[in-house]
Length: 233
Image (cartoon, rainbow, N blue to C red; front, side, top):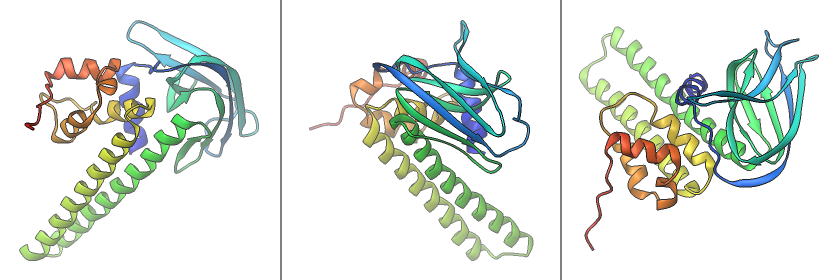
């Protein structure tokens, strides 16, 4: 579910993070263990409001694919199948490994991809815990659960949310100067809203000026009318 959301979010905002100059070569090696990819064209594509740019492409052959080239910046692009987004990838210097499996997708081998997908793994774990608790609540309610047991379930759900938000803020705090942090913020801020949520305000309030000045973050701040509240000494 989170991966589907990530695809929708990053595709819809149509932004690429060009956040650091680092001319160098990238090499992508991939393994496909799911159906529908053999013989199909995969590409690295950026989606901007004004244009779409394909940086590289290859064919899937016997469940494997490779790409290589040079990049002068760190970009958050999409691995696409026949032009349709499959998963986000940080295009950066180094060896990148992609695995497309029936139950999950992993991208690893370079700093930003490792950071971004480690966050996704942690977030998915919390999402699964939350969904399991919701299903338990539904099953118990159908069997005539009393108010006391319902409150126990509700407390558990609130605890999972709090722990997840602490994990998110901890990740952001550790990585405000990394491009991966902007990618995570893009995901978290993509849902339509008329005001800044408590979680996003918590992230922005603690963020250094460097993070706030990044193109997507700055655009969100201006769009939402966010203003940092200075704490009294």
